[in-house]
Structure formats: C-alpha cells, structure tokens
Amino acid sequence: MEAPARAYAGDAGLDLSARTSATLDAAGGPVAVATGLAVAIPPGHVGLVCPRSGLALREGITVVNAPGVIDSGYRGEIMVILHRVTPGSYEVRRGDRIAQLLVVPAAHDLELVVSPELPETERHLDGLGSSGR
Image 1 (cartoon, helix red, strand yellow):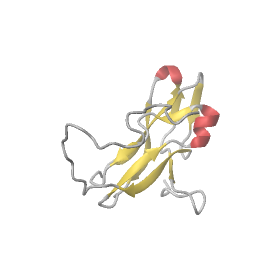
Image 2 (cartoon, helix red, strand yellow; image 1 turned 120 degrees about the vertical axis):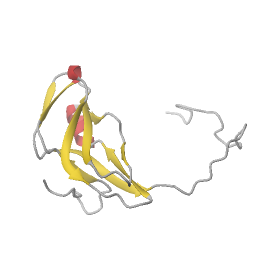
Image 3 (cartoon, helix red, strand yellow; image 1 turned 135 degrees about the vertical axis):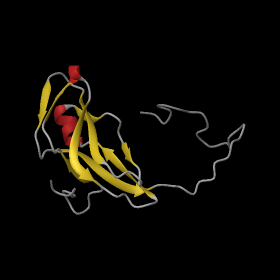
Image 4 (cartoon, rainbow, N blue to C red; image 1 turned 180 degrees about the vertical axis):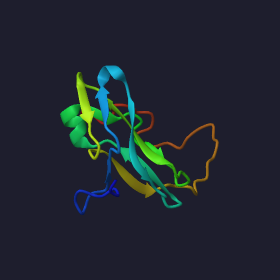
C-alpha cells in the first residue's frame, strides 16, 4: 500500500486507502476496513480519522465513530469503521480512498478543575440551534 497522501497541496487530510475489498450495506451494519498502515503519531498530537465528503454525498458512506481517534502511543494497523446510511450496497475495492487522516495538536497540559458552577458566557445554556438558521 502507498503512504497516505494529500490530494492537493493545501489539504488538511491525508487520504487513507482500503487494503482489502468490502461490501457496505445499510442493512448489514458497520464494517471495519483495513488500511494496511500503522503510524507513529508524534507525542502531543492525535490522529483523527474522518469521512471523505465525496463518499458521504455520492454514496451515503461515513466513518461511524467519526472522528476515529489514533492516540500517539498506538502502533497497530489503522482500521476505518465504515457504514452506508442510504439504501443499497457499495463495493469498497482495494486501493479506494475511504477516509482521511488529520494529525492535530492535542492539549495535554490542561488543568482540570472540579467546580460546582461554571463561569458565565454570552451563550450560557443556549444549545442546539440557538444561533439561528
């Protein structure tokens, strides 16, 4: 398998390809698809396995646990848990680009404080849909 690569110079994500073929079917549930790749994420960073927008739009395929987290200490093969959410089936072929990997800094120097109340903000408790349409 080829190393993950960016399709365009300014892309954030590195494309991940399937090492094996698989059939995705909404009725069949999620499928773990092997990539044949293991990576060493640098300390202080995390790898995020994210869906590809084209597969999502055209085929209804997503990464179920998006984003999948690859911790810096993990050394096993990257598996991508794919699911087709639209009716019908889709054949993933060996070499197909199935997801993208983003490597981003992870905040490890946080000071966690248990508190009975939180500081006020402009948004406060306004939740889903609170910013309008």
